[in-house]
Amino acid sequence: MIEDIKGIVKDAGKVLLDYYHKVSLSVEKKGNLDYVSEADRAAEKFLVERLRESFPDTGIVAEEGAHVSGEKIFLIDPLDGTNNFIHHIPYFCISVSLVDGDNIILGVIYDPIRDEMFHAEKGRGAYLNDRRIQVSGLRYPSRAVFSFGFSPPAYRMKKEFILLLEELVGDVNAVRWLGAAALDLAYVAAGRIDGTAQFGLKPWDVGAGALLVKEAGGIITDLNGGGDVLSGYVVAGNKNIYSFLSEKIHRRFSRYLR
Image 1 (spheres, rainbow, N blue to C red):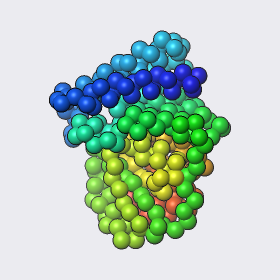
Image 2 (cartoon, rainbow, N blue to C red; image 1 turned 180 degrees about the horizontal axis):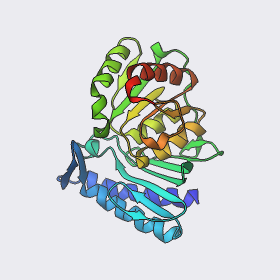
Image 3 (cartoon, rainbow, N blue to C red; image 1 turned 90 degrees about the vertical axis):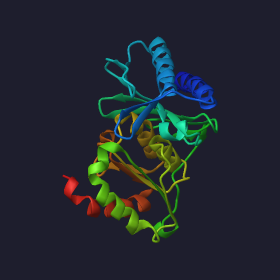
Image 4 (cartoon, rainbow, N blue to C red; image 1 turned 30 degrees about the horizontal axis):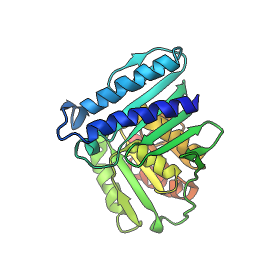
């Protein structure tokens, strides 16, 4: 099953690249500081059609509106990092996960620019282009690289988020805001980023990346330290970096936490 999904996702990457190299691209605003391009829609159409053809009994929930019911469900983000894509910043990806309730069974994240295919199946490890990957072994936050994402649903937390960044800058090696949450999580799984916190995501943004982090030996939780990662508010990293970052988040965002 995983190989079939990887093949479909890789073909969808070709659809994105065709649009990426266009001189002009049709873009619409779909919400507060949230955009959708014709590339998003074309890639989603391709993915939905191919996945339904290959897995007719599996449901689908996709970012741009596709919804097919089923006991197990594919969560699809056809283009994570749309703003990067429309500005020709080469940091975006396709994210597909398979879930059964809150249980994430498998995940695939594909970066078509670098031809990097990340995948994980529950209990079978995490891989980049079929080579096993692990989270970083870094112990000290002062040497760590962190990434953050902050989407419109989280804007009520803006003040606390800015204070968190102010606290970290100068105390850690580097802070990055890269613009594609799923790829950030894949980079944590691969040890390229030491820790990340993402605010205001949707389930299709985080499903595949959450499984990758877990299967690569990392920790990922919701902001409360619980397992509701599909809530879209997550903290991730190796054991030491996760502990450091989650403690700071609990302190800064306490009034929003249960």
